[in-house]
Structures are given as C-alpha cells and as structure tokens.
Image 1: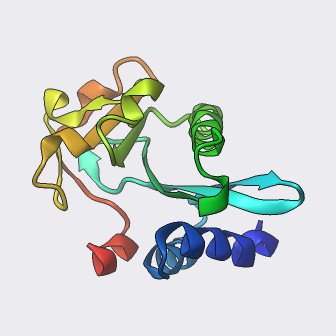
Image 2 (image 1 turned 90 degrees about the horizontal axis):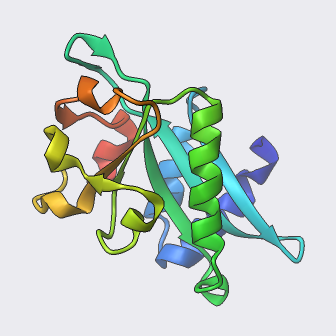
Length: 162
C-alpha cells in the first residue's frame, strides 16, 4: 500500500546497506503492475519483496512473467525464515494474479529450494549476469516456460542500477 512506502524503503536500506534497492523500488512503485509484500513482526516492517513485470514478447506471445526482487530483510531479523516466508507468499500471490513465470537473478544455492531452476535450460538469459547459474526461473503455469526464449527485459527502472 502507498502507506508502506517509507517502511519498505527503511527495510531495503537496512538490508543492503545503501539506498540503491530502495530507490529502485520507489521508481517501480509508480507502475500499476508492480506489487510488494511486506513482512511485519512486532508491528514493525522487517522484510520486503517486490515483483515487477517482464516486458516484451517472446515467441510472438506476451509473457505473463514477473521478476522477483529486490528482496530484503533487516539484518537483525535475518536467518529467521522471513525471506523464505516472503518468497513462498510471493509465489502464491503471483499464482493468484495468473502469472505464468517468475524469474530471479540471485543465489543459485538459495532459490532452488523454492523450485527455481537455471534459466539457461529453457534458453533465457539476463543481460546483467555473466553467470547463467544466477539467473533462474519458476514456472507457475504448465507450458509457460516454453513460451520464453532469449534475453529477458526487465522494467527500464532497473537499467539505472545494472
């Protein structure tokens, strides 16, 4: 909700030790197709996860795909399962919004526990990653991954931070 903007900014600034990710989410927030989940503990925002649309057409079909991230948890609340809970809730929120595919540029040791797989296996690339193992996908709708190929195009707000 708009009222959460300051709290989300505080979470991301604390989690990443700077304002780049918070600035990115502030820019993305202006888009109607972006949503952020906020984890609250003890009446305080302690985690945040944003999803934004993947742009463009692949194989002449509009992808119903989203990018996961940024995601952050306040340092004093890390290693308590908050990030995992946000990801699980985010996956379900994407299903409810009828998204067919989620992509993430992240740690290849972390995201597979949620079902993410290396995107190189379906021919997807991310222009910001030289290491294909860090770019992953999760198919939410059977057959949707087969519609995707080539380089994924995130919202232009990401280009400033790449």
